[in-house]
Length: 213
Image (tube, rainbow, N blue to C red; front, top):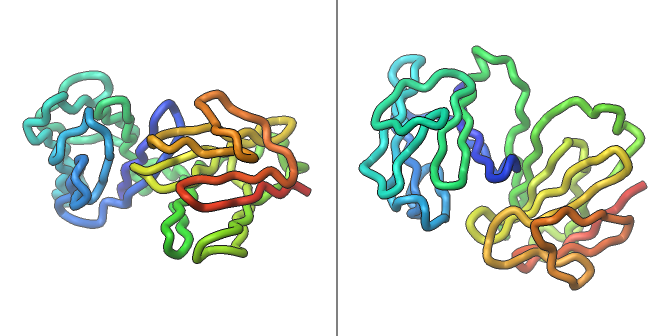
């Protein structure tokens, strides 16, 4: 089934399965793919499935829609195409054609804390075992094992952070949103910050703890 994988600065934020004949993209909350950024028009573009093919059409957006770096009005998407909307890149993936095993989005119960990882080889990281434990909110007590190379946490359009596995441990950094996440009470910037066992992360009003064994 075809899907769109949304990222910014090479960090995956969300992925959306294309299950309908018409999938809308824009800043307004009623769109199927919501990108809450001023560079994105309220109704920016639409994806239309015709048979097994997907067409992208720009809806007279203010800043335009680009496919592989070129402005596009209406275009048939090919597996692996990169759609650019503002600073965001949206990769078109057709699983049937590519066989790429990209992880599905996972979500905690309300409040909606989205957790998502990009599946990849562990690259020798098997000795690293860690998890994020939710301390507050409706999902308190839940744990998410950090088995992916990259895991994003947060609420798209509000605050999103990413936790990345590295050879010697894990790092966290701010991806998007006006409210920066905090690590042990100190705001996290765009530069990655190393995590250690027991660190407390606060993001969009939810407290979490990094646990490494």
